[in-house]
Image (tube, rainbow, N blue to C red; front, top):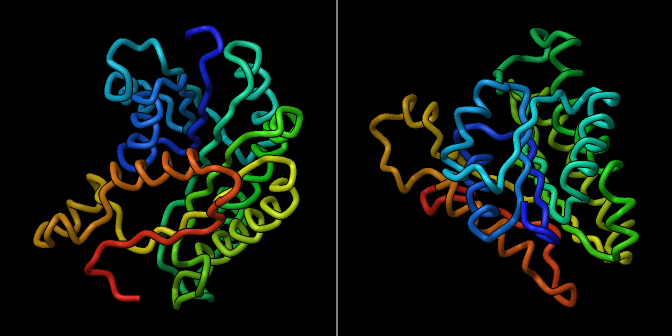
Length: 240
């Protein structure tokens, strides 16, 4: 890590959007910390993010566990410094279940990953951002944050809650120089798993992770005189 190098933290890094976001920030000379529950997957992704392994660090953690989050960010701050950018991309496993089929454990877990984790992480980074009068926090949302659908209750409730958290944070921290953004992903992202399930669909009918990551970068670069709080992204084929 170079002295005085800016630090980005990307939470919820897998072989799709999280990977693309981390690659973009490393390419823009950020020291980037990637976080996921899957340690083996993170290790495999590091060479794709930074072949020299000089501008990336990986940590496995459960961001719904308050003690783990506090310990994790203390380690990040002590080793690398305070993050200037945090991307909250964590997501619960997507399952289609009707109201009478959802277990209370699944319902709570979905809310914890989408919303509680975002709160716990934000509590660790906003104090220094306030002190510095700058910082960017971006939440990866979904269409489900705007409207619930049959068999998607747990996912929608988590994403509705996440959107409320992002709005509240933007109103509280915006005047203190912190840019809080909620990105609505309206469509399927072209991840290996998704493409495997839809082998006959044209590639440009999916959201390209690289292009989403470019939007996140541009959101970070916005001047505070014209901030975006909420933006929706979808492929041209998606109905809305």
